[in-house]
Length: 192
Image (tube, rainbow, N blue to C red; front, side, top):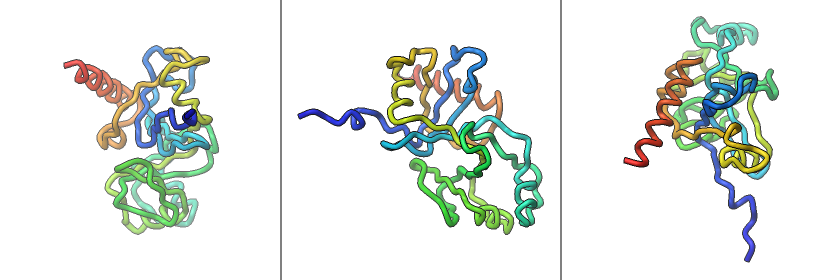
């Protein structure tokens, strides 16, 4: 009996993707770390974790008429698609009006109520807010990871189990370097 080709694909929801160091200059995903929030037969969706926009969560809250006094949390560029949509990746003990599971330990929320809750001091243990998403067509991410045509190892991603410290504890180049180091350690541990 023939098996559905979609069932042969791995499900990457809840996986971190680390851009391969050989990704060429000019590629928009060079030195990025992505968390995959959804992977199903329609699409794979993720959030770029390490691209800080410089815009504060405080500014977004104030534009929505919500008092939020902490100017330190920033909005991250989750990806090039739907760049005006705001989404929160957070620890899954917290919920808002529109919250969905995004792996074993994390959820995503995307509604105005999430800003009202943080404005009232109701925070998740861990959170980061993103503008935009990254998406792949069905089977595309699997082909990129496996190096199946038309993709080669230059297009590949390194995969990593999620880790609070890497997802929420750093940003930018430091976050990429930490994720890459964890990938190297994971590979090393497989052979020892």
